[in-house]
Image 1 (spheres, helix red, strand yellow):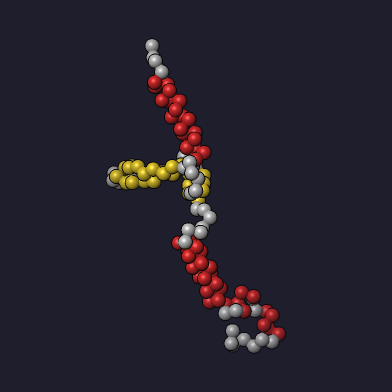
Image 2 (cartoon, one colour):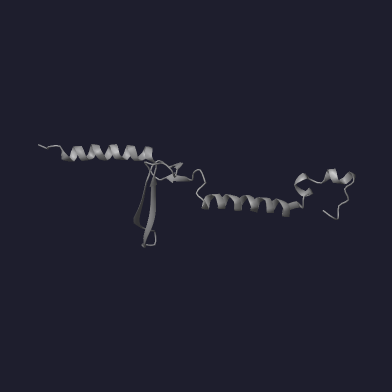
Length: 111
């Protein structure tokens, strides 16, 4: 910025470059990120998105009816691996209805 004369050419300098170019912009971005991390550490962040593995869509981490499981699978190399499984409340409602129907069918007398 010191090397540029603020004459007629100053208007040709992009606005993002007038306040120290990328360094100033990077400092602004870092300050915003630090503020966001501070808010998160204080529990002020509104929400976080998770992925519903049942319905293949995002959902709020604050969904009170959602569930999280971890299970074991065998990967392509034949090794056991722990994997997470998150399901939103709406999909859990559907799962619970299907489970209830299956339980009722199993419990029903059979001839």
